[in-house]
Length: 87
Image (cartoon, rainbow, N blue to C red; front, side, top):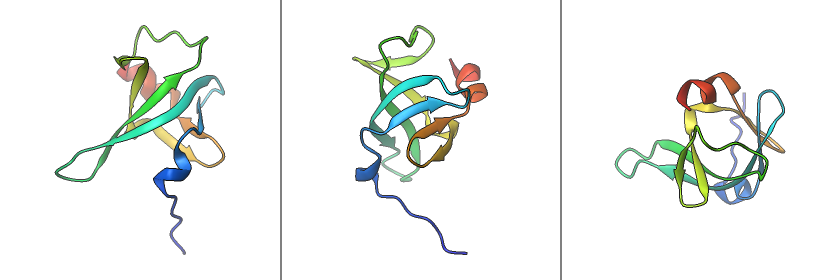
């Protein structure tokens, strides 16, 4: 089986949804651990209607743990249960 690869540049400005189809916002950046190279968080510009009160924030962005990512295709889909558990 051939491994699928996607470059980080192609991820910028992708729409982010939760697994229930709700719009979370748009991907702004990805945070990686400098020592290990492991991806740790997504930096998302939240949708205007998203209640951000339960999320970790930095300036105008919300930070979502990378392990909440379910899939990356035309949009990025986050696992709703993992988001709720962390918020």
